[in-house]
Length: 565
Ligand code: ATP
Ligand code: MG
Ligand code: MG
Ligand code: MG
Figure 1: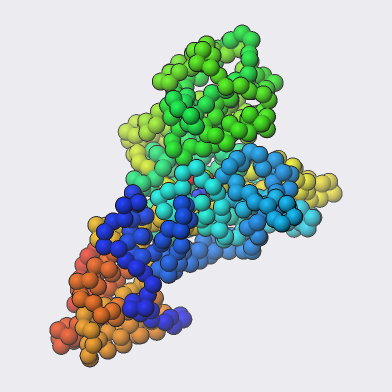
Figure 2: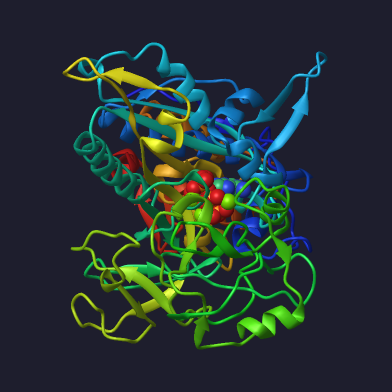
């Protein structure tokens, strides 16, 4: 156990606010501003002040420990990424305006990495040469940049944020599956050790692509995703394997597009129209013909629309007129079969899943959820594997009533396979027969800074933050009730003794009234407060307050160390 230094509250840069800041809606945003943990620099850009930074370090260390435990190796690549790499993967167009681009003095284009599949694939493509070297998993913890349409809620959705991103390279699908299973274990332990109650939910693999994906959803009313779940392990969100289709009433929400098609056939799928959730920036829905040629695309936001207009995703499109919408029987609030030419299939995220048939479930926000049972493989090919349920329905797995709530996406694991990066970028290795094969890749992200916000969402009360010990900026605060004299000196000694036991201690030595100190310490949420005053010391005791339960107990000065340490 290493001896830590006692931090002095009188020197701590943690400017607290008495009132709730007007700009903040969520508890985590409000409380981190009020506790002097974060400050806004510009929209979606925040400075982490010393208290927040200490918690970030602890979250990162838990993450590192779990990654290292499954054999992943930490390293670091540059944030700045040459655009050429993104051209090779084809993502430069598909990613849209979330990608921050800039030019250097030689007019070379770069992007600020929103994720780093390309850089890592480029790293290994010339140097991991043989199946004997595989599998390899590399990770980094680094700032990421995404020019989010709506940066908001403080650290929850930033434009610059801290992510752990890991990339695995395997020789076979079986090996990828093993790495993926290890990652799932590591993610579950990460959430638990951070004090988060989180659910693994089968997910739409979205922009990054691939076949199998799980999101780790921290349960919180403030979450952007709505979920149903059951204690048996069944979980579903309103994104996975179902789709929300929007028809815009104003610009920029959802837009329907199509190319001219001849006659109309029938598709059995049922879809209901309503707006995309505010963060729903990448759902697209397309109708494609039997040869995989899309005929109608429904896209949620401006950027995909631009890409389609530029002919980058698939084919030529034009905006559907109101009359054409009517012709297809598509309108807001519509439920029912869509008439389509024979052989036409409905696909979701057409750029990624055009090879798969897709069924669109009746899906109403906060009402219907489509998910897979935990004992079944989750693929969009098999409609029978998917069930559409709502809270209160019997769990499709065990029959117990399903619970409903909201979740914050703290992490996601993907099996990418060979196509999306390795094959496109020529990243190959020699297999047992000496044949060149593309790597089976997986990628695995954790939102470190978002985790901090999610922890506060789950751990606070009307007085402030209530840190789990594992991620608290300081584990114990020693509060001196007296401003000077023997009782003050004794408080300072207690703080030193605790620190010498390896405990993270902050000493509230400020020249403030006890009431002010109590309020600030409650707001900052240190798990234990040791309150030291003349009166207690006269009886040989100090008071220990448990922030989570509010319980206070007088403890004999001599037995304090054995009680706390
Ligand atoms: P979201 O659905 O919230 O936009 P994402 O699915 O786009 O997130 P991923 O590409 O899966 O995000 O990135 C890995 C993790 O990084 C996410 O699970 C999330 O915890 C975190 N993350 C993503 N975007 C942000 C952001 N703008 N601010 C903070 N954390 C983020
Ligand atoms: Mg996103
Ligand atoms: Mg997501
Ligand atoms: Mg994600």
